[in-house]
Image (cartoon, rainbow, N blue to C red; front, side, top):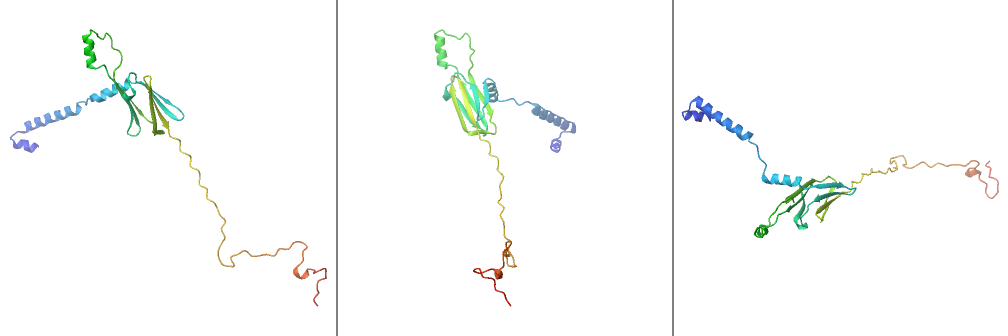
Length: 203
C-alpha cells in the first residue's frame, strides 16, 4: 500500500500521516463498546422482576413462581438446550380502546403501581433431573413446575466365575489306578472257608 501511495506522487511525510490516521480509526473502532440489544435488556429486567422458589424433595424438584394476573394459556414452559427450563409469560395493560373510553368518560389514573410486562425465569436443571417427566400447574397466580428425579444407577455386581474340576487327559491309562482294600481281620480269596469246611491244604 505504501508503494501505491508513493506512485500517486505523495511524499514520505504524507504517507506517514495517512498511516497515523488509519491507526487512530482502528483504535477507535476496537475500543467502541458493544451495547446490549433491547431484547437482552428486556429479558434481564423480566428475570429480576419474576420471583421464584426452588425446593428439592427426595424424588423431585419443585419450581414455584409468582405470575399474577395471567391465564394458564398465557404461560409457556419449555426446555432449551436439553437442560435449560424456561418459564415465560406477559401481562398486558388495557387496550387502547378502553383507555380512550375512559378518557371520554372523564376517568383517569391517579396511581399505577401494579406490574405489567414480561415475566421470565430460567433454571439449569441438575444432571439427575428426568427431562421426560415434567408437569406444571397454575392456580391463584402461582405457577408450580415439578421435575422428577431419575432413579440412581444400580451398583454393578461383581461377576462370579464358576471354577470347575477338570480331569487331566493324557497317556498311561488315563484313569485312576484301582486298589484292593482289605479290612482288618479279613482273609484273602484262598483262605475263605466255604460252607464251614476247612480250607484245602496243598501238598
